[in-house]
Structures are given as structure tokens and as C-alpha cells.
Length: 310
Image: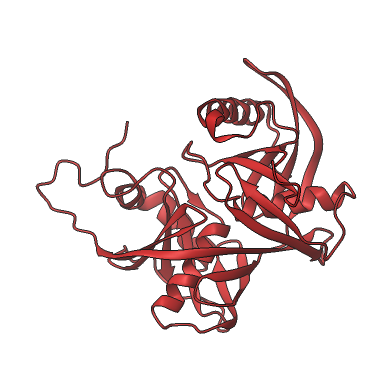
């Protein structure tokens, strides 16, 4: 299996070029459903140790349906197939440029949740214009074991988020373990009581917002991913949902740019424009860097060929 690895603000992306299962020629959403239901062992074997690493997101290149798109992509991590991935799209764009498939300029990429646009400024800098994002619930409260009552907004940015501002724990690198445990407990509690999307979609990510030590930076976040690892980047889809909440709360004007940093300090530049359905069209700018070009081998006698799952 031929892959290229990159990182976006420290968050790794593995683009799969060859060797994946045939998902047919349906819509991207249909192919994503097929990957999730019929090929779970495949994507886990690529993401889990010993081949993978914590936080790794896979980006499976597939032919797009939309003729004006340069690529189709299905994202996944070790736990789930994802609707969209912001850091992964930045990494994918840089990987496509590395391969000579795109040049600086404006391009479109098809995902299971819709077509997203990218602006490639240089070999490493990408702006993602995401799908329309929205706030679904404001100030929803839930009782969480060990934390008491936690209040947050439910937002959609290509994935489903419960955004807690301010964080119940300071958003610092020294608190990553405690933040992770707390976010897992929050996600379990909100899904238990059904605080998700309008059609019952469960929360797959939790965001804790906190202040930055740098006055020029709007805020710092900790983001829990579906596989219970934390996002090293500020999270593109999480930032999209965050923008929708800030806009709905009247805390950020259309076109106003802010800098959001992750728990490890890597930044995204964020802004939005009003969306046609009442939400926002997020703009996320970050940098990615190619780290490796590899061929993954799945030896038939390897007892851990399907990954280490504990």
C-alpha cells in the first residue's frame, strides 16, 4: 500500500494512494458508508500501531463524482470514518502539490459531506473553505461524573462537536491527560442524554476552550477526537463549529480574522462569511509538511498485521 505522511500543526495525515479496497463508484457518502461497514479491519490496520500512531488520520483518495473537483477523499481515524477533516484537507492539499497534481491556486475537493474548496498559497500553506457550519444548541447542560454540571454548545463543522467555553480544566500541555479523561466523560454524558445533532447524530468530538498566554491569539483549544486521542492542531472542523457558535453569539463579525491555537500551540487563522442556509462558511488557514513516502507491507504471517487493538 503506497502512502504519503504529512503533519498539519503536529497532527498527522496519511494519504493512501494505492492498495485500498475498491469502494465502487457511488457517491462519496455511499463509499464512506461502505468503508465503515465492510472494511473496518482495513482502516484499523492502517491507523493502529505498529504501522500507525496516536492521532493519525487516514485520507483515502478516490475518484470524485463532481467533475470540477481535483480529488475525492474519505477520511478516517482508528475508531471511525469521518465526514470531513480540516487538518487532513490541509495535509492532502500539500501532498497533492508534492506529487505535482496541483499547483498554487484555487481547487475543489469532494468529501462525504460535500465539496470543499482549497487555496494553495505555497508548498505548505493552505486555506480550506469548509462546508457550511452551524450552531445547533446553545448552553446545553449535562451532569458529568467528576466534573459536575458542564455547559456547552453543540455545533457542526463537518463533524459533530460539544464545545465547552470556558474549559473546566486549564488548557495546557501539562493537563493533556486530565483534559482527555474529562472530554471522554463529557462525550459519554452528552451522548447518553442525546445532546447531538438535529436528527439524533451523536457527538464525536469534544472541544474545551481556554485563553492563550499570547494576547494576539484569540483562544487556545483542546479537542478530543473519536479515537480518544487529542488533536495536535486546532482542529479544522472543530474551528468551523466554533466559528458558527461565535457568530451566533455575536462575538465575531463576518470577515473578521482571529488566530486559534491548539493545546500544543500550533495556530490556524480563522474567519467566516455568512452561509446561504443561515450558518457560516468557515475559512481555515494552516500549514502542513510532508514527512515520508512509504509502502506499507501486510505480511500474511505477521500476527499484528491488523494492528494492535486493546
